[in-house]
Each structure stands twice: as C-alpha cells, then as structure tokens.
Length: 341
Image 1: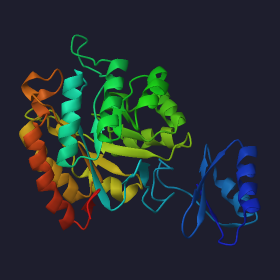
Image 2: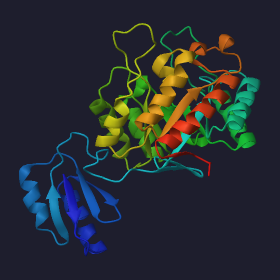
Image 3: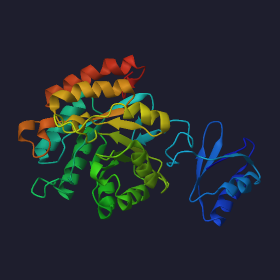
Image 4: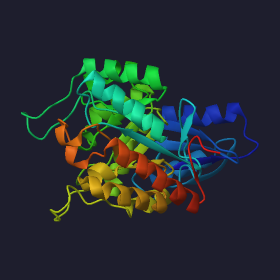
C-alpha cells in the first residue's frame, strides 16, 4: 500500500502518517521524489486501512500495491534508483564494467589483474575472498588475507572493490574492506544474511538464484530494502535449465522485464551466465543492448591455471578487446561508458 502525500504536505503531516503506521504495528518507508512524497506501508495490510489513512492530514491518496514485492517495485518508486559507489553512479545513463578474477589466489594474480582491467577501462574490481563451492574439496578462497589483497589493489589502482559475503557473521569484516557487498546465487534466499547486509548500509549486489523466478528475486531484494538500505543492485547471472551445453542459461529477457517492474539497477554477468569464455563477449553485448546498467566479467592472467572458473574467464587481451566492442553498443542504445565524455 502506498500513501501519496499532497504537494502542500509539511513535515509535521508526514511525521503524523509515520506515527499512525507505527501505532498500527506497521512500518512506513519514506520516498521523496521530484514531484511527490510517497510512504510505502510495510506489514500486514487490510482493506479498511485505506479508509483510515485517507483521513489523515496531508494525504492525497492511498493506493494498494498489486505486486507482492513493494519497495523494489515501480509502483512504489517510478524513478530509477541510482546507487553511488565513490564517483560512480550505477543505474543512471552510464554503463559500468566490473572485472577481475573469480577468486583471490595470490598477490601477484590480484595485482596484475587489477592493473590490466584498469588499463582496459574497467570501473570496479571484483575478486572472491570467500568462495562458495559445490564441492567441499574445491578452492574456497583465502578469507581475510584475500580481503587484504583486494584492499591493496584498490589502493594502487583507485578501483572500488566488490566481493562476496557468505555468512551473516562475516558481514562486518567484509564491509570494512569492500565498497560493494555481493550476495551470491546460493545465498539469494539466505534471509538472515540479506537482513544483515541491509543493516550494513553498504551497497549490496544481489545475484539471482540459479532457479529463482524474477518475483522471488525481487522479494529477496525486499529483505535488504526493508532494513532501510536503498543501495541495492540486482545481478542477472543465468539460471539453471535443461540445457547442458552451457553452465547456465543467460536470461537476457530478465533485463527489460526487471527494468519494467522495478526501479533497481541491474548488472549482467555473462561469465557465470554461460560458463564458456568465448560466449562472454556476445552475451555481454546482448545484455547492454537489452538495457543492463553494467557488466561483471571474470578476468584471469592464466585462465587455464585458475583455481576457480577458469573456463569462463577472459585473458587480459580478450578483456581489452571486449571493452572496445562494448563502447559502440553502449553508444547505439543512447548511453555512455562510465568515465567517458
């Protein structure tokens, strides 16, 4: 349910609505737009509530929300959300590129990759210090030592860093190092982790679960938003289907669908979306053409020796080539790469 305040409503009237919601064991989520102030009603609503709220001073209208996800819907916020990360804005007219290795392995690997992707035009550096693995016998990251390496890469290159957090107990320590917290596909419905990430107030990138519907994905985003953290970025990384040729099926259609129903920015991850390095470039270009606000690309100095996901990682030369290919596609859809004139 949305409470639309009149243009003439003052702070006292807005506070009055919020106080009334609190008295009814509900929560009000305030959104100030260019043309109107909207209060999203969070909690168990009922038909008679509309009549109660319409009587309050300063209220222009009360509108039921038809979708089960509230705060992430365009009904709640028609304007696109913009997530600031340093000097970057994710979700505006500029397209951002996140690049780096799947996992931090050695200091040389991290630093050489950071330098290479920065030189090619990447805007954010990625690397996994804590890695989930299907098998307990696979490499699972370097932990806090990996975080230290990422921080060193940021210090040298100036690139903000994004890295995955696996457990609620790790959120605080990862937030000390990361500019963006990543919630991976296996944790999309780890609701305790989502709430803890929301509490951190750091930007959070939420990957789509490997078998999740778009509605389930957006409902997971609600857990972060409901904690008052508006800095949520979605990531389409492919879903599991009956096709076995690729690691996942990259759902390009999800990009314009999410853009239609949600105001949250969306990053596309064609590396996980395909699992094959030679499919990364064409799917990256398709994602940008479909409206993605950015790309996340895995890059490794020696993919054939990578401890994680070497088959889907680009070499330095291939990543530089992709950046050259992306630029004209970005321009063709009326946008520009971040940091360009």
